[in-house]
Image (cartoon, rainbow, N blue to C red; front, side, top):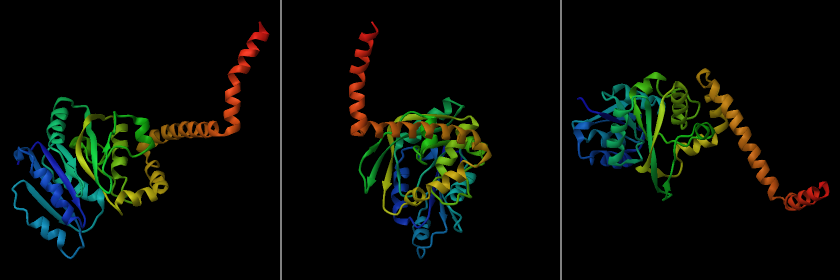
Length: 275
């Protein structure tokens, strides 16, 4: 099948949620443009997820059942199986909007130097708010994981950095790691100022666990030879942010505040005496 874009959905014990994810994709008007690959990463919920995935008979849906290998491997295996030049990694508990597909294809068709297209999102579940991601900022990318995994990715860009890291000590930052390696490989990022997918906020998500192990993951990611420049830049950026934070905290103290308030009058008096 010669589809324009492949949607890769890693799925581990997410049978009920993945139905919503698939419904959001199957609602796209031109299904001929799409290939959908779901990777059942060794779900162990008594066959519940497997049974739901096997119930789909759509010709553009492929389900890969594998032993549990982790998020990075599940995404990589799905992308390797993809026949399209463009990929959207969609988490099994999230939902896609039509515009992400059509606009992502259009941008990547026109700009060969762009490897990643990303957008804003709307949270649902435990939180209901719009998330404005903003224009690409490498300083922000080095500081924190601010671009979600749900993006439109050029497959050749993914290939150029050997895909997602399958050896992460704790799962959850694979997308951050990939985006940094893509940037330092020379790929451009394009932001669409529009809500193009829905992000489910829930308890006990993978992101909660990864944030609890942030120091371990940072040490691992920034020890990579290909991120040597990234580490140097991050150290400088974090030093600057720490300086700004300390300065802000100092200004909040009453004694410092008083000193700052009398600084201008003292300077004015000093200038008069010099005259």
